[in-house]
Amino acid sequence: FSKVDLLIVGAGFYGATIAERVANELQKNVLLIDRRSHIGGNAYSEFDGETGIEVHRYGAHLFHTPNEVVWTYLNRFTAFTDYKHRVYSTYRDQVYSMPINLGTISQFFNQRLSPADAKALIAEQAAEMAGRHPANLEEKAISLIGRPLYEAFIRGYTAKQWQTDPRDLPEHIITRLPVRYTFDNRYFNDRYEGLPVDGYTAIFERMLKHPKIQIALGVDFFSLKSSLPAGLPIVYTGPIDRYFDYSEGELGWRTIDFEKETLSTGDFQGTAVMNYADETIPYTRILEFRHFNPERSYQNEKTVVVREYSRSAKRADEPYYPIDTRQDKDVFLRYRERAEAEANVHFGGRLGTYRYLDMHQAIGAALKAFDSRIAPHFTEGRAIG
Ligand code: FDA
Image (cartoon, rainbow, N blue to C red; front, side, top):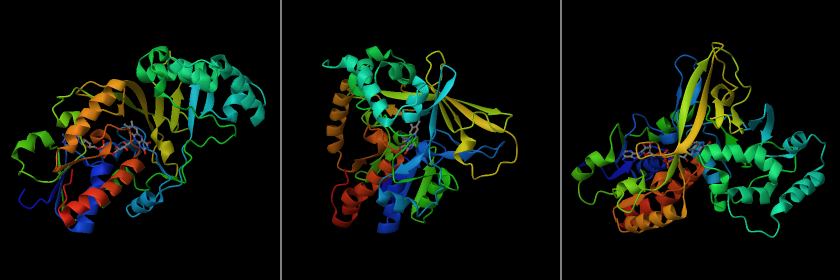
C-alpha cells in the first residue's frame, strides 16, 4: 500500500466516478477493489455467449437523467442510443401500457374518455377515501387512483414485491402514483435518456483506464482492513451496517431472484419489460434484453428472458432496495453518526448511504463529493470523512 493515495471500496458508478476524478484531476494513485469478479457494480452487463445479446446481470438498467452535468460527464465515456423506455403490464390476459395513462384508463374502462372525463372518473372513484386519513398502503393507493385501477395494477404487483398484503404495509411507502391524463406512455420524463452504445461495462473500462488506477477484483475489504496503514483515506461504497459489524442492528433490504432462460424464438414478448399484475403469477415482471438494443443485429433466432421474483433479503443476499421502515431509519441514523466520526473514511453510494439511487444520482453524488470532500482532502489536507 505504500504507493496508494486512496483506497476505493466498490467499483460501481460511485466508486468508479471518484476513481476517475482522482486519477485525472489530482494525479493521485488509486486502488479500487471490489469483492465481485467484475467492475461496474450493479450496472454491470455482459454479452451472452450463445446469442450475443447484452444482458444486465443485476436487473434492467435504463439510463435517464435531468442533470446536464452528469449527462455531459458520462458522454465522455460513451455514446448513447436513442432508446426510450416503455413498460407494459399484463392483467387478466390483457396488456395495458404503464404508467397509468389515458390509453390505459380508456382501455380498462372500455370507454373513449377525454382527459377531463378521465380525471373526473378517477376523482369520483378516489372519493371513497374522502375525509379519511389512509391507514395503510391500500387505502393510500385508493385515495390516489380509486379502487378499480388499484385492484388491477397495484394490489397484486405490490403484494408480490413486498410479499405482504398491501393492507399490512404502511401508507408512507407510496407518496404518489403517477397517472397521466394524456396518451404519453414514455416511462421516464427526463430530458436525457438512452442506452450505452457499446454496453454498460465498456463505460467502466474507459473510466478506469488510467495508469494511476489499479483495480483488484475478488477482494473483500474486510479481509484486508486490519492490514491497512493507519489513516489511509478510504472511499467506502459497501453496506454501512456491515462496516460497523452490524453493531447497531441490520438494515432491511429487498432482493430479487433472477431466473434466466434462452428461448428458441426471435421474439418472446415484443417489448423489453412486461409487468405481471396478477397475484396468481409468482414473478413481478419479465425482461427480454434484445429489445433494449433494437439497433443491433443478432445472428440467430434466439432470445434471452429473465423472470424477476422479489423478496426480502437475508444477510447473504444481494441488497437491492432499502425497505426503510421507521426502525431502519433510526438504525441508519445511528450508523451515520458513527460514520461521521471516521475521519479517514468517506461513505458513499447506495449501500454506504442506505438510499435507493438511480445511476445518474450515484454519479451526480460522486461528482459533488469529489469537489466538496475528496479534492479538498488532497489539496488542503481536510478530513475525507
Ligand atoms: P453498486 O451497488 O453499483 O456498487 C457497489 C459495489 O461495492 C458493488 O460492486 C459491491 O460488490 C461492492 N462491495 C460491497 N461491499 C464490498 C466489500 N466489502 N468489499 C469489496 N467490494 C464491496 N438505476 C438507473 O438509473 N436505472 C435503472 O433502470 C436501474 N435499475 C436498477 C435495477 C435494480 C434491480 C437495482 C438493484 C438497481 C437499479 N438501478 C437503476 C440503480 C443502480 O444500480 C445504482 O444507481 C448503482 O448501482 C449505484 O452505484 P453504486 O456505486 O452506489 O453501487
